[in-house]
Structure formats: structure tokens, C-alpha cells
Image: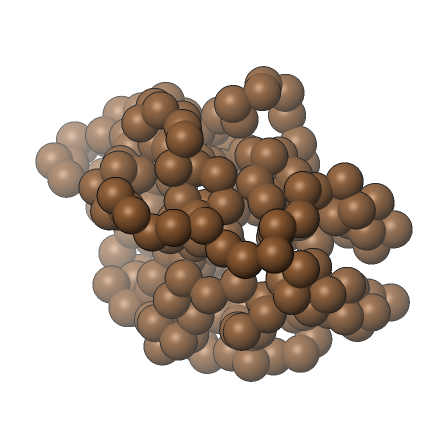
Length: 209
């Protein structure tokens, strides 16, 4: 990424050219109301098994998009999720990040992964295969919904493209918010859930207080 002197990262939670609306339009924000999440989950289409991976590649979900003044989506998430973040132009060069998945403390931005809460491959199997490249690009760079989060590389690698029926964050205290975020994203983007996935999401919501 080319760095321009004096450029500024966008404000927290700001959207850029690559973030934005779902295929149906509208805006959804993070929910902290488990009853709302349960209602959204009950409205999602349930399938007995995941769809095919035929034709999938990460290249069909272009990321990370620019967000103005040579900044990109990765920079924006690092700035949003970190503390005492320092930048050089638009590059995040220092800061502290606490991974919500496993509690790891990270002080080198190069060692921080930006996780897609609903993995790209999972999205492909649950509806995104039928989207246009433009729609998939918006999904992969979605700053408007709780789809992108700064986490440890180890937790991100452990998760891979799994859904909550086979992978959950190591920190059980994060299960409530993780489940709500997963449901918000799938609801916003009209993606399906499997029967097992829905069962586990309901169990995770029981952690909410």
C-alpha cells in the first residue's frame, strides 16, 4: 500500500468505498440485545447441510479496499480495535490489541489478523456463491456490521472457515457477543444457517446476561 504523508485514517466505525449495504439494502448495527438476536436467528433460512465449495476462491471476495486518502479497511479495523494506536501516514505501526477470541495481548500490528466473523468460505456455502463479485467485495470489507474484528493469528487460524457448530472462541465470556455478531451478519446478508449451527448459536446466546 502506498503511504501518502499526512493522510488520516477514517473515524471509528466509518464506512468507505468498499463497505456498505447488503444485497437487499438497509443498515444494521451491532446488537447487544440477546432477545433481538434470537428473533433474527429464528427468521434465518435453515438448511440441513452446508452448500458446495465448488468454484470458491478468496479472490472472489476482493479485500482490503481503500477507505480514502490511501487508507484501507485493515488499517481502519486496527485503529478501531486497538489502544494507543500510532500511525505513519495511513499505516498502523504500533498499538495494543487484546484478541477477543483467546485473550492474547498483541503489540505488533503485523501479528494481528483481521477476522471475518462469518468466514468468506462459510458465506460462499450459505448463499454468497450466487452473489455478484461487487456484492462479495462489499461483504468482505463490511465496516458497517460486526463482520471484521482484530484477533490473534493463532485464534484466526484455529477458526478457519468453521461455523459455531464446530468452533467457538476459547474465551467463553465472548460467546454471547460472538453469537450475536454472527447472527447479525447472517441476517443482514440473508445467508443460511445449518440445523447444527442454529442449535449451537442458541446455546451460545444462553451465555448472555
